[in-house]
Length: 316
Image (cartoon, rainbow, N blue to C red; front, side, top):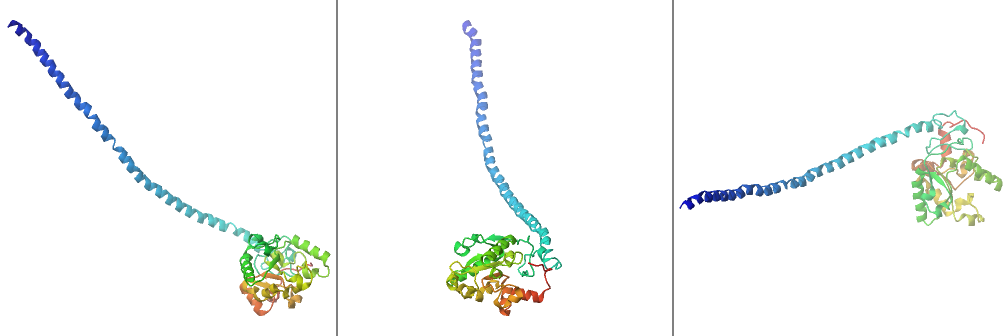
């Protein structure tokens, strides 16, 4: 009995230790189990991040609009600048033109790049005058038309000329262009060539430098494949018999419809100072060309009759 009593405290201590051991897991378990749900709760921010690009995707659409509007607003400013920039160059061109200053010597005269500038053997141009907007014909016509020559004309002539040549070809004709723009120096070379090769016909074939409409860049000399046979000379390029060719007939009847006029008609030699050149057509616009055609007069005759002299004449 005494031994049992002595053992009772030991048994109680063991029971108390067992009870304490059983309570510890219960206290630890909540701590170990709760972190897992907490971790899954923190995993939801990626969902928020996923929605953020949706919100962020709106701004990208806005900048393009802003950029587009900015780009759209910028060109007008650039265009305005580009439009106003050339304006200062206009006065220097118009000041020496025949209209504002008719007291200038003809050899110092600059045309104003209009279509109706008077050029005769009396009223010439400065050796330094070069028209604006010159372009190579081979960029617009094939070699059957240009013959491979490095011919230039003002760009405003190209459209009407192309339409006219297309209609001539559609009618079964084969026109070609022998010459277009000639600078002062090129005209001097051409003049010298004709003086050496055909001195008796030089005045018919070539004007002195500074006195040729070719310097305006709006004149075309046409050719015809029929001319050599009509003239009886294989290498002929210019001859008054051009009017007998199919191309010559067609141009005489229809060139005005496209804005071209014959500069030197047969009956106007005393007025223009040039002999008859049935191959030489100048672009003056449809309205003026039609008026000249209906009135049976040349541009030179009309202008000299209605305007004062454009400059003080000098001897060619």
